[in-house]
Length: 255
Image 1 (tube, rainbow, N blue to C red):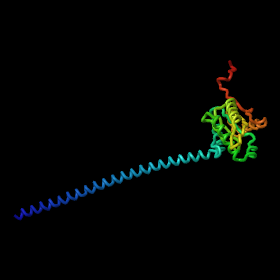
Image 2 (image 1 turned 120 degrees about the vertical axis):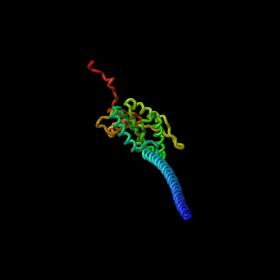
Image 3 (image 1 turned 45 degrees about the horizontal axis):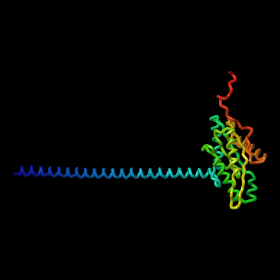
Image 4 (image 1 turned 90 degrees about the horizontal axis):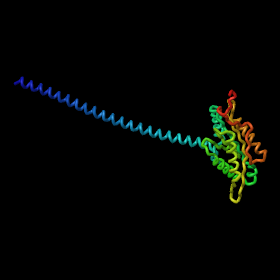
């Protein structure tokens, strides 16, 4: 009897201990699973948060790039006329001279000055003067058909047009079209009607190793002042202008 009781007691202890262990193992397993689930939820939330932050950062960077582009465009636009300003002209002309030198292509430049502009300001006031500058800019811009051509306000009543891949003849043709456009146009301001003309100096050449922006500007400017001295409302081409002659067109003296 005692042996039977002792055996049952031992079995009971063993069963109880086994139950405790199983309970502990089950509890630990549940805790582990809950912990794992919590970690996965945290990881998912963190990933969502990172993706959201990344998207917001990308949107912010895109907006910043757009604003920088707008600011850059504003910094290269003339406030009165909306065409490119002197800062853009200096940068673009320098870049096109390098390209002309590299590609052996002819670069054209027009320097344009409104005739008798001081008299317009003196006789009719600066509001009329500003209107004349804007109307001249509009007319000049309308005559440009290629996206590579750039009209710039050089300063005051003077404009410049950069003409990549344009030889002497092409520059002269455009200059004459511009002159005629303005000569045939009348500018209205209230009851006032004005006829405005321009003088234009042309220069076109393939940039050489030592060519600079100053060379192109001086050559076109010299032609411009010659047009002024010859009576205005005139196009003059610089004597320094060149035309491109391809190797195929060059006579072969060895034949």
